[in-house]
Image (cartoon, rainbow, N blue to C red; front, side, top):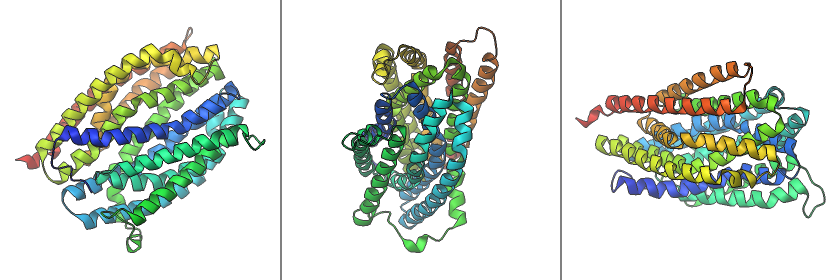
Length: 447
């Protein structure tokens, strides 16, 4: 356990954010590796993996539901010096993870086909996406176990073990991908199915390694079988914080799905370009996301210790660091957009769509840094409902107008990107107002 209620706040944020950024970059490499090798198969394969990969946002919504609640409650317990409660939260999160994994497998396999038929540009894209998800679905279900364990560590201020495990899993995925996708060394290529299987096998290895770490090395929170009997009251505490945070990712899934739907008439190349541009955007967002993820345990422990001044200072430092960093990233992304997209695809139409998309969303980067900092602060305060209100406002102001625009004469794909930029700025304005109101309400113990 690392005590985050003492010492420089900015130093704590940086110390936690760096390994988390590396870990998330490694995690993002799953789809990057898949796209790199799948790109050799063709546009339909890229579009299929991109569209299928978007399904991952739905699973991420559920894992965040578990992870955010676990981080917040364990951080509060650590700040209050209540180790027994921290252990109870951790073990109940494991039981909840097992239940969510089982439900995700059943629902996931049932929804794959209708989801892809609704969004994919053509039959070849549907076939590729279905093949990919059928093999990747077990790996997505196992994400719940990874999230439960890594979130518990993050709540106690420890992030390095998770980074190491993520690095190992992606290295394994890099080794397995050419073997399973292209048949290197075996002579039996599986195509996009191999991409899904490689990712699943890598996640299995990650769960096993992190479990061994908890058994042999972790002392503050640990496996206690006597605490594995479901306790609904504890589940309600976790879900009360986690459900809105999961809803944020669910709304992101809706946002991405709406875009894929309205650009489908432009063809598989357009969907492929958007898919690649989105993965690149996710990768360049990782540093500021890592800072926002560090906000939850740092501010959360200080909230548990009832130190209002340090909670406020955590948000201020994170907002300044995140926005400044994203300004630098925006300039770099604008200049290098063709090269970033061209690394994964050389087909002119795919390159054109991906490059244009990236250069538009660069205008979102600075305010996105503010949005991420606000989201982390809501988690730290133990009330994430304002965050989902902010995200829902963005979805409504984007989805309804873009669906209307898509049926108008002269509709161009650039209209989607214009509207996206405007709605992110609106979301940032609302988020800042909500986080200020929430801090004024929940930090009354300062007096």
